[in-house]
Image (cartoon, rainbow, N blue to C red):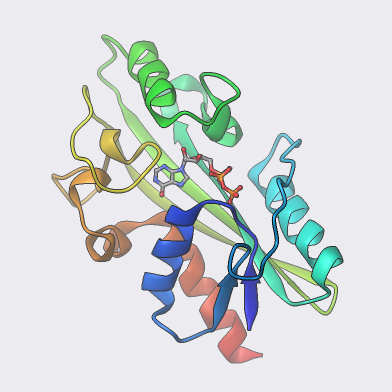
Length: 190
Ligand code: ITT
C-alpha cells in the first residue's frame, strides 16, 4: 500500500483511474491525515520531494506525491512551478486561466506543456519520475470536465481540450499518466 500525498481530489480520481487497482493507493483523506503541505521551492522536483518527505516523516509509510506545472513556451515557462497560485494566493482555477489568456492575448505561438514530477519515498530513499504532455493553449475556455487549466489546453494529437474529455480520454495523453506509468514500472521491477 502506498499513501498518495495530495489534497487535490481531482488528482486522486485520475490516479485511481490510471492504476485501476494495480497498486493499492490511499489518499491523505482516506488515511485520516489533514495537513496543508507547504510548497516553498522554485522547482517542481523540490516541491514534490517536500510533499513526500513531509508525509513519510509523519507516517513512516511508503508514499508518493506529485507536483505539476503548466509551462508556456513564450512566457518563459510560466506559470510553471507557480501554477496553483499564478493569479493570487487562492489556487483559484478561473483567475489563473484568466491571467494566462490575458498574457497570451494576440500571441499566435501558444505552445505549452504540462509537466508532472512524482516523488516516491520508500525505506527513506527517494525516486523521481517525470511525465510531459505537449500541446497548445486555446483562445477561450472550452469544456467543463477536469480541473485547473484543463479548459484551455489541447494536447498534441487531439482537437479537444482536456476539459472536453472523460478521465479515460485524458489518460491517453496526460503528463500524469506518463509519470505514473514509470512509477508502476519501477515498482514492478523492484
Ligand atoms: P497537491 O499539492 O495537494 O497535490 P495542488 O492542487 O496544490 O495539489 P500542484 O501544486 O501540483 O497541486 O498543482 C498546481 C496546479 O496546476 C493545480 O492547482 C492546477 O491548477 C494545475 N494542474 C495540475 N495538474 C493539472 C492537470 O492535469 N490539468 C490541469 N491543470 C492541472
